[in-house]
Image 1: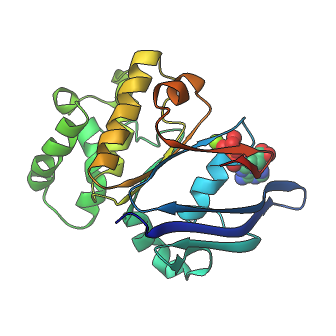
Image 2: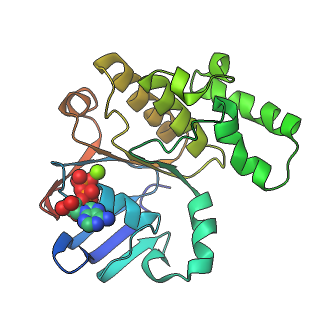
Length: 224
Ligand SMILES: Nc1ncnc2c1ncn2[C@@H]1O[C@H](COP(=O)(O)OP(=O)(O)O)[C@@H](O)[C@H]1O
Ligand SMILES: [Mg+2]
């Protein structure tokens, strides 16, 4: 599907409250199946870009299109189904500490009325995909940073999303685990998903230099 614009930002501005201007006139397109790094210092606007796509943030000006659909102005009632179509890996993982690894992935499926045993079965291949099958019954607090990160990715994969948004996925990991995580995201990309990764990890950028990089500076694209 090369050549098809999957994501289009047109003149996007975001202000948080009266005084914080997080993005100024940001425009870019990403095609279906691309793998893109958003790079820049803390505060440069990387997370805001990802949050516009999942509609956690709305622009004060401009438009955000996903497959031609205006995400920035869609009714609130359409937002849950929008989010189900994407795999969101938040910066803080967002894991539930009192739920086991498999339950952290499964609660969304349970919520739609599936039986516990069914859910557990369905989750096995997802955990295998991120090399966590042996940790299914561990609690997040018993898992290493790398394992928690992989679990957060696994949870983002339950609906086989065609768009994956990963915010600082190597944030607190050592070099080996960082490479493992980006390699995993790369595999998902090779299976067809569009992948956007926000990072300020220079080692990762050097190692995976074949991918497109969009550099952010003070809320603007400084290099694309
Ligand atoms: N919820 C918020 N309320 C107020 N200011 C925010 C909020 N989220 C982000 N900001 C500010 O917006 C700017 C861009 O932040 P962010 O998109 O998180 O950048 P990055 O992910 O590159 O660190 C920063 O100045 C940040 O402090
Ligand atoms: Mg951020």
